[in-house]
Image (cartoon, rainbow, N blue to C red; front, top):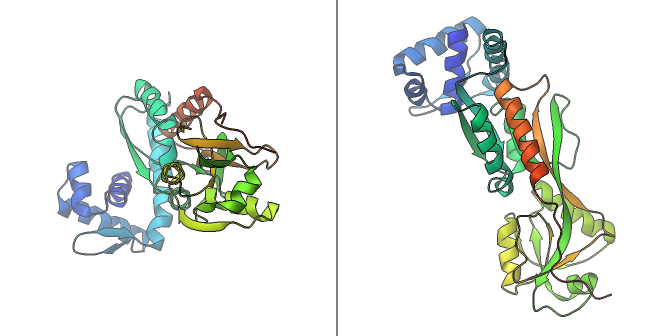
Amino acid sequence: MLREFKTFIAVARQGSFTAAGRALGLTQSAVSAQIQRLEDALGVRLFDRTARAAVLNGAGREVLAQAEQVVAMVERMADPAGKATAGTLRMGAIASVQQGVLVRALAAFRDEYPDVRVRVVPGVSLNLLGLVDSGEVELAVLIRPPYALPADLVWHELAREPIVLVAPAGAPRLSWRELLAALPFIRYDRASFGGRVVDGLLRRLRITVKESVELDEIDAIASLVRQGLGVALLPWSARMSARGLRVIPLPEAGAFREIGIVHRQGGPTPAAAHMARCLQKAAQAEPAPEPKAGRSAR
């Protein structure tokens, strides 16, 4: 049954019997036969099939997490040193970590696991959290949700990014509260976890703003501010450029965006565990965010 589980995982990851067959070196009919045997043994249908795709249904998503655990357990038994030399690691990552922390982590990971293929699934935090919960990725780097994680998920903090006010470099020399009241407000999308932190800050401080634009990309928001279209409250990281901006720290606000790693309870595979360690080391090596461009007049 181990072979069928591996084929099932491949179909879930590749999205079709044909693509899974190419990845495994099997014909489409061989893949179909193995999935049929697995479904017969389990007594449930695992996929919603169309002419070109195979999409996991509810039962399939439940089985996938267990199948990955079974395969990982067998691989650990065959590799007692805990150092698998091949295979694929599927992980998720939000856009804001892909050009810094993730790059350094991948370089360190490849030194230790050169033959493990890493598939990075991009997405927003809410979607990535769902992928981890369903077992479709082993771990993900995302923004901590503003609610308790499911009991079977584990969180490891990587970084805390303070919420700051960013204004155009030529903005009037007003206090940050006066700037928020006077200029149009470019809002960090409230549907995102980070945007909810900003929304909670505004509510807590009882600040009313004049909204003009709402979007999820932090770099795009900063660019709009540089163009003089308004001010914004954003999480500030060491990778961001203060060029063309007045960056005003808000130490009294005490608000931040927390970024971390989430994986399922029970421990990830050895490769995933090593990736988590690489991410933690890469985050520790990154300079602490210190916004210095411009101060607020009191």
